[in-house]
Image (cartoon, rainbow, N blue to C red; front, side, top):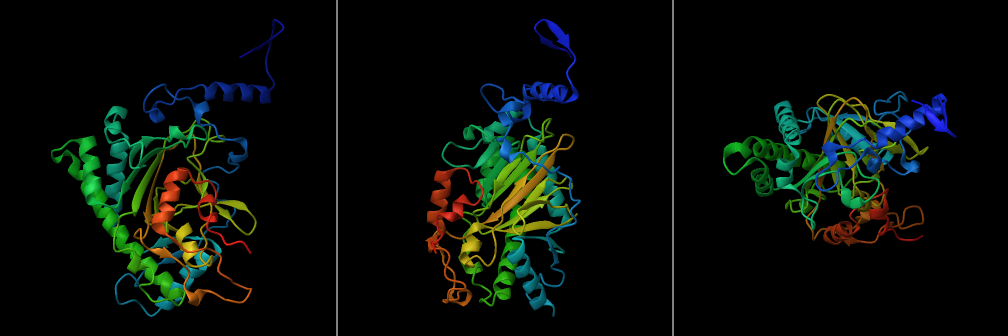
Length: 382
């Protein structure tokens, strides 16, 4: 390729050549993330320069990684002798990192693998069929190709978001697959997975409560209803310009607890608070990544940390991630218990009390969570 300047054809320097190639790439159409209307191009997905990732999706070279915790022997109602120790390890991981990997978690491999097959099958459908289950303009539930309503910094991802409700799952699946038996493999896989993760989430809540010296049901008693617990699936196609695009931008999860299933590709990066450095999280087979949400940080007066994270993309491989967001009933009051407060100056109350219902309304109005902006509205100035 030649550059023409004042009528002269000039072969560009290597850096200029790379810039020209990037500009050509930015004009490429993106069929897989264009749902309706004019086709989007790569340039529509280029993020603000200050958000461009400086680490690759598979950069785990730091040797610094979140802790791994095993639930072996501590899944049933009669835990092992090391129950106290494991509970404390879980709390410590949430205090330092806000994240940990969970192995020996008791969720059947078949349940997880069947879910992956059904989800990839859904995303492989023609766009017009997927759009039969498109999200509404009022609630972010259903299918969408990226989030074009953001206007800028669009996520490089196809997205499915559903409530933890068999009725809601079946209603969505019928729209996409049909009213007869065609929807059942997808519906059954989703419902089975949701039930398994709800049970696992309750166990994690019990262990965190125990590790902090609280009654074992301190959290779980607020999760009897599933009205706000939901699942979000992102599938990230290969991206021709991963150095300027993101699958999901930097944010903290506003919910209480997230149980993340990811495949073996890699792309999750966590912001380590001590030195403000991004850390790549190495995938581990048959594991979940657990992270603290904003609501749990407020509930524990900041002892358990909700940490900013993001998802980067790559040129070669598509990636699947499934986030299960546990949220309490709308009437639940998020208020730190006295046991976790020090009324001296060392650990005063950090957040005003709020209900999950009110917080959820704020989130729906905000539409997009950036950094920790969601929780910061409840900080008490000191």
